[in-house]
Length: 445
Ligand code: CTP
Image 1 (cartoon, protein in one colour):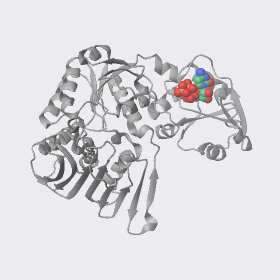
Image 2 (image 1 turned 90 degrees about the vertical axis):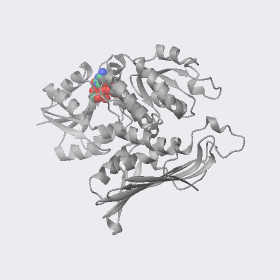
Image 3 (image 1 turned 90 degrees about the horizontal axis):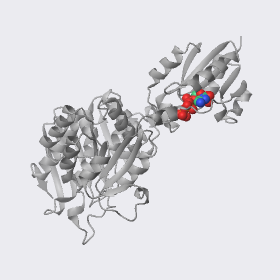
Image 4 (image 1 turned 60 degrees about the vertical axis):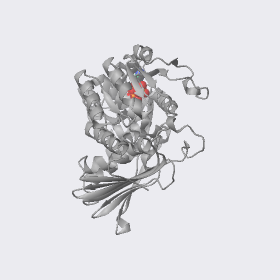
């Protein structure tokens, strides 16, 4: 019996895939199809799959051509599969010509001519693109435009703000200072205006029937945040809190590990985020145009705390050093949260510097995420006995922004909120910012 193996993603199974499978099958008597896992595709930079692994497996199964299906999960698996399954022929389409010659050592390698004129990428692109408009001037917006280019099915079309000369990424976009005009031309907005404008910008967009991806905090009070989510729900629109860290695979996994008992019972979460880069301490800076440390950093720093301990803390205290009280600019803020069975701290600063690490302490061990933890691809689980320590690495492209845009586009398409930041967390974040602004439980240092 001649065993043949072939590999692929098989997203939105099309005629080209079926022809490949038919010819692969004809090369022998028994066809094994390797289908890439979502995680493995991510490491290969394939982030746009519309279908999950299970859906892709089901589609290949339904062709009736595969005698066996395996999931491809890691680099180097092909050799393992060929040996393990006793494969005689390895085959793929001619788009891979030459790339798998190294497998000749283990079996015969055949490149089959690729079917012209069809690909998963093209099928995905045929769908109408989600047109996104940007609102606001935060420097972060150029990153967003750059990252959106990697995502199938979205297009950043315009910006509502004043034109700035040094942003070459934005030069092809439509510019306006009239928000209504932008809203007319888009299906969704990404809001990066000053935090005090988020509520107004988000509400207007939602009332105009547009989906919203909003930098955190979504609003400066809990009630306003809740109101926005209610409007979105009533109108069947997506409102997503844009904390990019939530979309980093490593971050997502470490939160699951902490919650799953890997370090015992979690007793403390300590998150530090600081940056001096955008200069609130520089003399003559117009502080009224700056994000304070609380709005700039605290949403990301509170995320692991709320995801692990929940949003119902017993108490909290702010310790703040102000840069300018009049402009509500804090150079440094530490927040202590007390929960029924644990404690947490946030340290955020734009006018002070510290080590930007995340430590989650448990009764059996701790999770350590080195700086800058908010854009991490790596973490360690550490124990008293160092031999038990484990290190984890997960590919991270575009600081998580790319995956966040993928999730947003998928949510809009499926009309299901796929935000990794739940509504109660967005509301809790807005609630903490509200208390800070009211100087509730705040000790000045
Ligand atoms: N294939 C083919 N003809 C096509 C498209 C794909 O023969 N028109 C083959 C590929 O060479 C590969 C297998 O089908 O051996 C699975 O390919 P996959 O990467 O899943 O499909 P693509 O349509 O190429 O996907 P994408 O556009 O995302 O790269």
